[in-house]
Length: 290
Image (cartoon, rainbow, N blue to C red; front, side, top):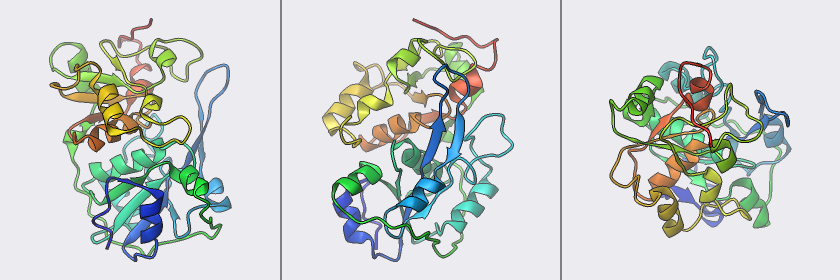
């Protein structure tokens, strides 16, 4: 059984468990096509990349499509419990299974799947450290054969304490609630510099900058050593004694920060799912630059 797998799984650990019938390895890749001059990005399914080569036995999790709300005004939005339960069950996720999520490139798609499963009450999920790049670097084989795990019954049990809504963030900005807002985007985007993919550049007032890229080794894409993660996430001690709400552009890259907090034992960090896509679209809501 795979219920003893750690939150962050190495290539060696996964390779040893690939024959476990309870394992559900899922490629969660998505491609974002960003116009160089700025403006909204195009969301492209990662299915083609999956079909060209994936970890043997891995299925494909459509994070941007099946596992998102198709009626929301912004991409990747949290789906209804009914939709998520149906689609997770179709992926073979249910009691007695363990998910290992990975992505072809950035781990943000794997951590997004991790967060979605956790939000809907499923804890038996790990992330492959380094994703497909680490698998390739280890010289391990790939498969082009599409995989469908046997359907399962997934029971969605929402954990609203893991989610921050726009109203929650407004309360923090307005001083009605106490929490640290952590912005996971690169530092120039945090400062409002350069082309923007959002309605307006800048950050939510009072935010701290913890770019998701600083939590990863730039050469391997693997998560940095625990002591380096703790130092980055602590932000000089500012996040240590406060509730934390992480956000980014669309609720994806911030899940890397949320996952890194969880690696350090902190599982109470909330995700602002709408993030800047929602916040910046309303000109009445404040943003800071510089």
